[in-house]
Image 1 (tube, rainbow over the protein chains, first blue to last red):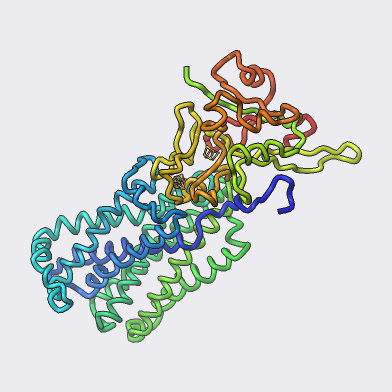
Image 2: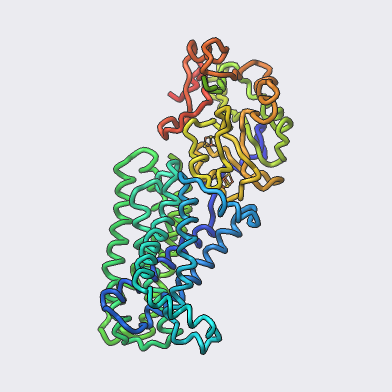
Amino acid sequence: MNNIWGDMSQYNPVTWHWVIAVYLFLAGLSAGSLLIAIAMRWVKGDREESPVLKAAALIAPVAICLGMLCLVFDLTRPFHFWLILVNYNFTSVMSIGVLALLVFIPLTFLYALVVFRGQLATIGLGFLQGLADVLNGLRKPMETLLFALAVIVGAYTGFLISAMNIYPMLNTAILPALFLVSGISAGAAANAVVALLLFKTPAHDHELGRMHGIELPVVGIEMLFLFMLFCGLYFKGGAAAAALASLTTGTWAAVFWTLVVAVGFGVPLLSLLLPAQQRHGKGVMLLGALCSLTGVLALRHFILYAGQSYLG
Amino acid sequence: MNKRYVMVHDENKCIGCQACNVACRSENQVPDGVTRLQVRVEGPYGEVPDLHFKFDRVSCQQCENAPCVKVCPTGAAYVNDDGIVTINHEKCIGCQYCIAACPYKVRFINPVTLTADKCNFCTDTRLARGEQPACVTVCPTNALVFGDANDANSDVSKLLNSAPTYREKVHLGTQPRVYRIPARKGGIEA
Ligand code: SF4
Ligand code: SF4
């Protein structure tokens, strides 16, 4: 402090840090893994539980709970967390998100019960068998509700930060859509990793191949939305256009071009050019999926930090 | 009629002495390292010997359309009966959404209470006792004028009706209630 007016450290415009970026990533991942797995199940009219669906049923509750831990322990008063559950403000995206999560989180657990109902006895949860069988009877409405909530949760992570009109890069209409789509690509990648490693699915599994096939259009849409975001800022001019400097200067520019673009988009897309034999190998699939996950996590960091660094 | 408390900071009269800053710290028990109010001294501008400084009051702008109130999930950031934007510390969980959303970056976490904090025109202390905010009372040059802009006879109404003023970041639709009288010597950048 060397100003007569006092310490300036509280005026740093970057308020939310990496813990929040990780939370946004995990919530999007949880929603995205379910969206893609449930959609694939519907399209195929599956009767049995595919490895991809099992992976999603496991990832969704775990990821969202880890995300909630990030959120709660990032509060300055984590033990007053309950206050957010009893007080609501309907102009606050956070408050609306709490309502959605209050239904989404328990539902992800119940859905896991349904998907794993055949294995409950072997993992010592036999006493839940009755509940799982009853819920299985309600599967269609349950899946529909879960799917709708996953869309809301995925988009909410974008709305949460786009609701602040002081940050031109965040305050855009495309951000919730971008986060939803990149959450789906992270979800697909995580489903592949868990299916391959935990459920020992062979890499040539038909289902995995199909999910891999959806990846190209999803990544394409993701890149298109990013491009639209930057164009929107450029056309708006003024402070919004100034925020584009985040693409050319500073740490976050490096993060964007290396981790988001080269690793997150480049590696998985280039792997599609490999001959089919290698492309569907376990190693290549795992590498592609881990790169996608890294890219999405880096994108959340880039948007959050670069977004908060430029004021309108 | 509802009250519409506003404050005017005359940048011609201000000398950047920080008496307001210190008075605020003492009245509102603001801990070291954080501030509700500071007057930034910018400059010097101009040619020697005609140098001048610009004085920028940095504190809550008391937005009539307050982003902090809109985003707060618990209602801890709220509008008081007197129209002043303030904080119910009991309800604050410290999510910092309001701090991120405030366009003027004047909110902070109070290291003692661990809740969000900022200027509230002394609504719960001096105003409640019928006195003017601490900064206004203590200013040696009377650069600060505070009062009800809905009362046509108040000093602040008369001032607003006679002097040119500006407010910060009006393009964001916040309707700030802190007005500034620009310094005649190029207070607004050329
Ligand atoms: S200046 Fe910031 S803290 Fe004050 S009312 Fe406006 S948004 Fe809230
Ligand atoms: S930090 Fe406190 S006052 Fe600010 S939005 Fe969160 S709960 Fe509300």
